[in-house]
Image 1 (cartoon, rainbow, N blue to C red):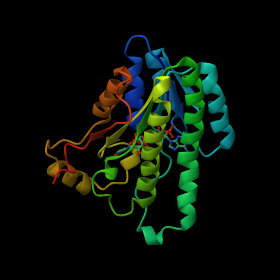
Image 2: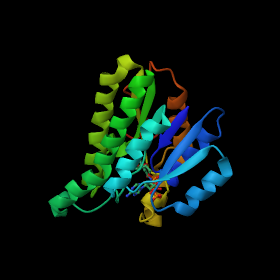
Image 3: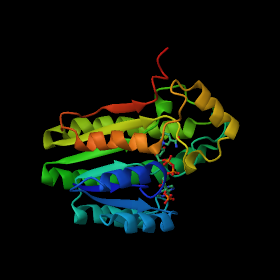
Length: 240
Ligand SMILES: NC(=O)c1ccc[n+]([C@@H]2O[C@H](COP(=O)([O-])OP(=O)(O)OC[C@H]3O[C@@H](n4cnc5c(N)ncnc54)[C@H](OP(=O)(O)O)[C@@H]3O)[C@@H](O)[C@H]2O)c1
């Protein structure tokens, strides 16, 4: 399959890029923004993974990627990139403009790219959309996460709409919702907090990008009968 993953050059995205590219028969196109050196290393290591520069904050780069989607004839789109920090401050202290800015640099690119992907998929009568959400949508959202969880909730509902609108064209849309992972995204989290997360974890082990990538691979390989689901990787933390 021809796979396009956004933000596939670092963190969870890199784990997904590497795992899929290691399976026979797949070609992976992955976008990067700041991780150029890592993107080059992934290309050199794998041979069937190709980097595409795309900064979600630059309209012309998003539109160029949109055009490329039809040229590449992709079978799978993985919406993974997220621009901006997950934790800001209390909702009432966040400037209202920040909600719009984060929507513009995250949701609009995901919308534009997914529209292009669906147009390609409908012609092929096949396609898979996989969206990376967060377990914050299922667990208690941490203080300061309102912008982030609102964007992810928006993507979650889009995923369900994509699933129902496109099922008869053999196109699926599914999501994964991981719990805390140690990536650049969570670099600001204090060591003591990380220890607490580990201590309170039923497995006494923090979720890794490699484990989450396995769930993405499952969705990639799964029957098209699986549609509209959200795989939650939180070790049952929401069960009271
Ligand atoms: N870490 C966690 O605890 C956690 C938990 C649940 C869900 N997630 C989700 O997992 C996904 C990946 O996050 P991560 O943990 O792997 O963190 P990460 O390594 O910081 O990944 C974020 C990705 O987004 C890309 N990105 C950032 N700004 C961008 C921009 N302006 N334009 C285009 N791409 C941009 C980055 O590309 P460059 O590196 O090239 O700049 C990077 O590949 C996100 O959707 C996040 O919400 C993370």
